Image 1 (cartoon, rainbow, N blue to C red):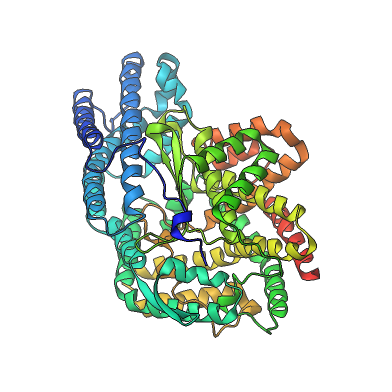
Image 2: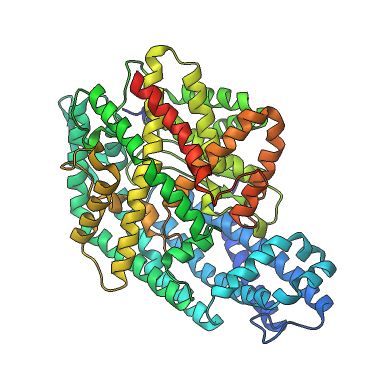
Length: 602
């Protein structure tokens, strides 16, 4: 069971604003509105929008472009800071009415900013033929050269400005708000659970953590209680799924994409051959993972594992950590890789950048968010003391270090496609897991290997099932709405295809579509394969580090700093990685295969 609430930190954002109704926050909300008003006037005065032909006066255009870029960078930075602050309340207490109202106000302002950006994007697209000449004369545009090239490409899939305006407003009012329905209903659900003669109403985050319990009876009853809980809210969440996927299908068609998957590939800055190579390698690894599942079943004294056994701990070593032990362990292991990384992590722990306590009203899972106004990050986790929870914290701190490496870049050059966004997180998680494995006594090695393989199987096998699920849902949603039963049937079929005889087909999880928030953001469809890409790409980068040692660190930091610009294949090629080749992905999977071999021998 998790540490008591008094021992687990809540994040601190007091250096950002004093509160949701404090003067500094209110002033910045008003400032954002004023900046958006000014940007709108600037756009009108300078005729920013799609042009019939490129401008002849590139020097004058360059001056306008420089000012537009500066205005947008400032706006995006302020908006992202306000959003992170509000989200720090709404994600940890979904019943917080003030946070909900403030987020709604920010979203309305966001619509106006999106509308302005749409015109900027269309205008930059029109400048494509003369962009090199403009950048030669405009210093700020020159600094943003690659970002502008990316915008030229993105502008090719945009509707007329007024249609984009309409789409932005309708998305906010409809399909784009479905994530609120999903996380609101799932985070506020509690279910009674009896343990040690005492019955408590447990939040679903705590209930799902019972899957890590060494007692199979606890795991099984936790699973059964969880399924019963999801049964209660399946209809509204099915409504949300229909809304968000219907929105995605419609927008993809109107924007001229071949499919919703096409939009995801463009967003991730990869092409279909790259995805096909990745998926082929993933599918080719299923027999190896099924061998791991069967070995685990045997170790558990069973013929086949049920779903509730997937996260069952193995080994006799007690790998339970207090929060203090976890933070010290992560910092120590990061220090073996880089003193700068260790210092970053220690700062995050000491200054309460991490919200670790599972509690009612708090959303499940874990994430890291950028807080640009103070050049910091914040991490949400649901810490239960397991080694998996320690690995999760190290993973999210990797995202934070990625953000740290981009500090100082203008906002239009920051960020990362989802595929490359996992690079630093996988690196950090691998550092911690491998260090723990190397220093572990024999009785602990099984436990650590188990944790590594649980995570790898989720990112390869389960992620593939989610890809199959979302592909079929989107195809069928183009014709009609689907029922909760439809979603369950599609999910179970996808799990049977991927897990195969590695799991008992009578005890799978029909509601994985309901509890995963990744399905409910209209702007991030197919937020599944990027995790597999990230794991295997991260392992490839880790292999380079093992080969080159400390000399790799400056190149690694530069890799993280530059993920916001250009195509993933071009960035990877700087490090001798060909992501269009299945050989690269197979080589990374071989790292996992060696872990499976060692696991099966124990």
